[in-house]
Length: 119
Image (tube, rainbow, N blue to C red; front, side, top):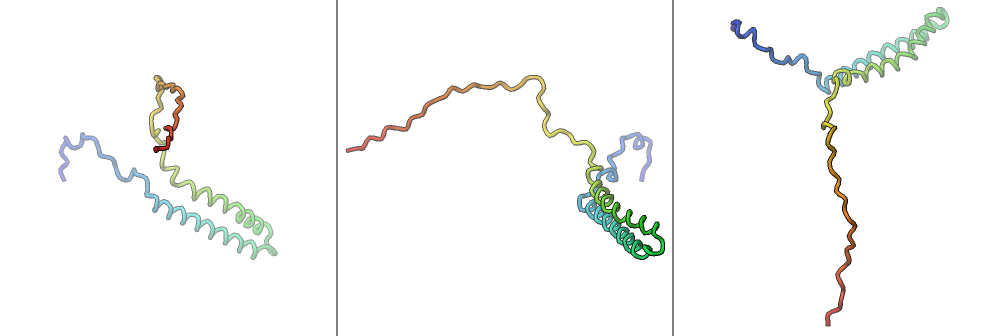
């Protein structure tokens, strides 16, 4: 590959690593994070059941963890895609100065054609 000076000064192309992840990959990552959090919650419930009689402080800590973890897991799982989008450009620019003129229509009465029987 040539590394001549004129190539070094050229603007660098956009890197693909700066592109956001695809929706399928993002969804898989969120599902994996949620599943991991639910495994930790299950471990907290089991730990609470095993330590309730011998170490109540550990059991209460595990109980608090098993109550708080689902909320944190849902918030963390839903935060992925929107965070990467950034600000959205407006779909259509809003007109600021000259509003479109309004045409006032006059009411018109339309009568049906006369129905005369032909003889």
